[in-house]
Every structure is written in C-alpha cells, then in structure tokens.
Length: 491
Image 1 (cartoon, rainbow, N blue to C red):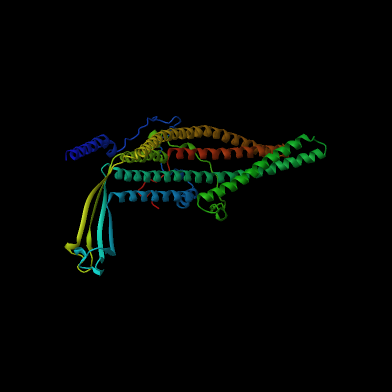
Image 2: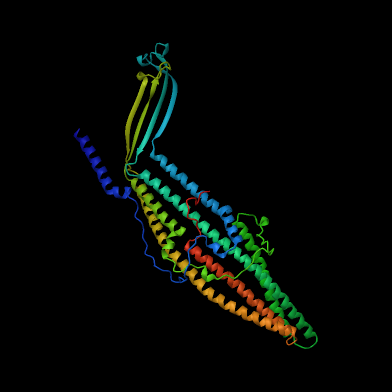
C-alpha cells in the first residue's frame, strides 16, 4: 500500500509540475508580433482635399471599366477557387470542434455458442442440452457506449483556434487574388485603349512615310537626288511597320488576357462598344495628380491582405506549436457504457439484465519522445519562419509602395515633357500644313512635320499608359480596392 501511495503521489506531483510550467504556454493567447515601421512614405505626395476611396478605379470615370471589374470579380475562376478555399478551411474548424464532444456508439449483437461442460445456471433459462456434456445457448447484447477525451492541456481547443486562424489566412489570400485581379483588369483595359490609339497613329505615320518614299523614288529616277534619301526612307518605313505589327500582336494578346480575367473564352469575347462613337474604347487624358492620395499614413499597409495573411499565419503556427507541446503530456479519456445482456429476448430490457461500466484511461507518451520532440522542433521552426515572413512582407509592402510612388512622380514629369513636345510638334505641323497649302513649302516638308507630330503623339499615348499603370500600382501597393463589408467573401 505504501508503494502504491508513493507512486500515486509521484504521479500527481509530476502532473502538477507539468501543468504549472506549461499552463501559461498552453492556455494563453499567442503574443502579437510588432514591427517598427516608418511613419511616412519616402515619396508621398502633398495633394489637398483628397478622400481615400476603396473603389479607386471609379476615379477614372469610365463605366466600361467599372463593369469589367464587376464582371471579373464575379466570374474570374482564380478568385472563385480562392473563395472555395475559404469554405474548405471552414470545414477543418467544424472537424476540430467535433473533437470537443464525446464519441457515442450504439451496438447490438446476438450470438449462439456451444460450450462443452456442465450446464451453467446463468444460461439455464435459454439453454438446451444436446448431450450431458454440451451446452448450447443464445446471448443477446445491446448497449450505448461513450468516450470523451479530457482537454486537460487545451490541445483540442488550440487545434480549433489554429483552424480558425487558417480560415482567416484563406480569406486574406482571396483578397490578394481579388486585388491583383482588379489591377490586372484595369491595366489590360487601359493597355488595349492605348494600343488602339497607337495603331491608328502608326497607320497614319506609315502612310505618310510611304508617300515620302514614293516621292524620293520619283526624284531619284528623274536624277534629282541620289539613293541615300531612299534608303533612309525605307529604313524609317520598316521601323514604323515593325512597331505597327507589334502593336497588333500585343493588342490581340492583351484582349485574350482580359477575356481570361473575365472567365471567358477569347473566341466569345468582345470589348464593349461605345454607343456614341461606335468604337471599342476611347483614350482620354486625365489629371493624374488628383488620383493619388496625399500624405498617406504608413499604417494603411497593415490592412494589406498579404500583410494580414502573414500575421494570421503566425497565429496559426503559434497554435500548432502549442498542440505539439501538449503531445509531451499524458492524455485522459473517460469511457463508459450502459446496456443489457440476456440469453433471451423475453424481458430483455429489465434491471436484472442491465450492465454498465465506467473508467478513466491515461496514456502517457514515454517511448515516442523522439517523435514528439521532432514535431515540436519543426513547429517551432515553422513559427520562426512565419515571423520572418511577416517582417519580410511588411518591408516588401513599403518597398512596393515607395517604388510605385517614385515611378509615378518620375513618369508624371516625363509625361509633362511629352505633352510639351506634342503640343510643339502639333503647332509646327499646323504651320507647315498652311504653308504647304499656300505653296510656300513642298510636299516632303509637310509630310516630315506630319510624321514628327504623329511620332510625338505616339510617344505621348504610351507615356499616358505608363502613368495610368503607375496610378494602378500605387493603389495596389496600398492594398486598396476591397469592399469592407460583412458580405465580403460570401459566395
């Protein structure tokens, strides 16, 4: 008796010690990881009277763009798959929550046995002897059994919390897909618009340059010039033709890509037509400086879905580490059953035929220590990776935002130069067009200034597109474009 009491005392002492040392770790909420961030962005603008809007694409005031983005969010398969991943993650929550409840089983069995030996009084009621030394009897059993694992170390509850954290990870991942989708649709839309204008401008350049070449050929045949202007004109014509072919190709590829974003086959996709102009898209200049929010608070990046996803990943791995720590401690299972056993079905459910049992099973992890320590070390390393990834994601968010703002500032200044060049080239073209009509200058001079004006316009179109892409990249880097409402991610 003394030995048994000593063993029990030792056992409960060990359990108490483990509970004291592990209690804080197993039952407390994981610590929030903090990262010091700059208060302001390096290249923030200083505009006034600007209100930040999540649906930033509406600032372009293009209904076709708004409709395309709405259609993409509704039909893009990658985004739909991301939403499905949220639903899959939620099933793991309910699966882990089920472990918090007891397992209940109902069973019934009927057996017929032949037992050699003398007839027992227990089975005399339903037994029949075929010989003096053999007993044949029936046994009917029915019962209800239950098993429940005591969550002493909070392992089951931590598993539920980990599953919920993974649901949050899936939601933020879906938001990453959504933001990327919106940016891609807007960029593809504006790129097609720019390519349409570029093709029109290049066609006019090609025709003008071809006319210049024909004039030089005639003059060469008349002996008025040598062959050098002809070769120069041919080279210029070939350059324009190459640019025109590339624009056709890129336009087709971009249109196919836009169809993919909308979840459609390219064969069945056509861009919406403007009912007024009967053209697929129009290209308009915009005051881009009014589209970028000023003095952006750096805290806005904490709402970026990839940053939040990285933060929830830390939480998920923290709970996983708690689960693996609990593997070092014994598990406690309560078991019990109640039912009836009788050699006959007559008066089967009676107090005399009732049977029951109750017990406590304690399983101590002794020989699988190496396995548990490996699992725990792996969970610790994954947690450390998640922390590093969180910090890396924040640094990358600042880098992307500062780069996007810097690109916008630089490209905006370049756009101003291209606008000045175009206005100057257009002014010269109009002057020489008038002089050509009045006979002051020749056809080649007029065509040369026309080509120069068209080339300036071509450069302006592409720079306009570049600045628009910069605006889109700024909003994408800021993580703006999500609808913050309760219905989000419910499909």
